[in-house]
Length: 323
Image 1 (cartoon, rainbow, N blue to C red):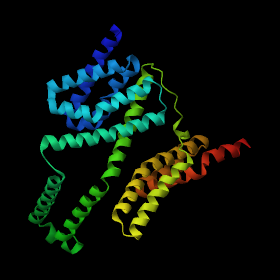
Image 2 (cartoon, one colour):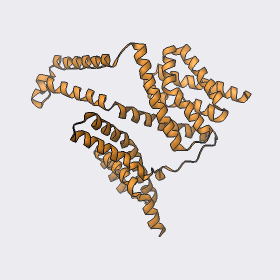
Image 3 (cartoon, rainbow, N blue to C red):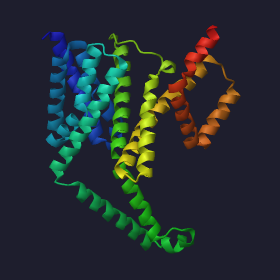
Image 4 (cartoon, rainbow, N blue to C red):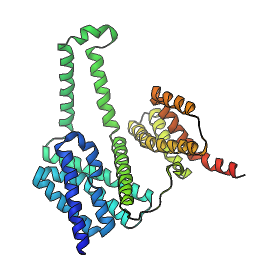
């Protein structure tokens, strides 16, 4: 192993440990550090090979274990270590962006599932125990409302103990049913953020990376629309024939498609903003409308992304202007 690679690996291991420990000891920072502490691992593999990367990750894990405890180091390693290794290999061997992203999503999803399994083993809890604790928390909140006299004060406005229990029960049921889509959405967000930040860092230090299309040109093959159609069909069929499992699967699939369609929709609007110069007045109106009606605006943008899959507005505009 070259001396330069060993020295870089040692420095990157120290940086990895520092970033991870910042999130451990300053909890609010963990929202950021959990997304970036594996980037030095990516850099180590991209520059010096996977052997240096694995040793860097191992050394950082040992430092974290000595500082914050073995269980903390193991949890961090299981949750994010695999993603750093996968992206390091992806940049080392010049994978395409979509291939690296899909590999990252799969890695994050599997890592989170492994983390949950480890969590249940270390704590001795079960899913049933967690649900019981959730019910106990609901009872405690309702008791606090009752002690504060809020039910008597706002009872005429519909704030009753029964309505509160129904709302909490609906939230818990929603989280139970939508857990697969929540997991995949979390995996997509984590994988995409880490991929973009790793790519930015590698370019900053002069490491060659695979060319990537500008955001305004991001597209998916039109066949991807069949995933949305399958989700709609499953949701409607499950409701019509009263097959809850089928309906839940369809809704989960639609929830997974939603962030993807949002990205495509924003890509279309980025193309339009690059192609056509809008006045500050028009942009201000659009910004105000988005601020006042965020849900409606996001739904509209996702719808634009959906129809762009089928009609490919940007290709038609380019063809029209070329003619």
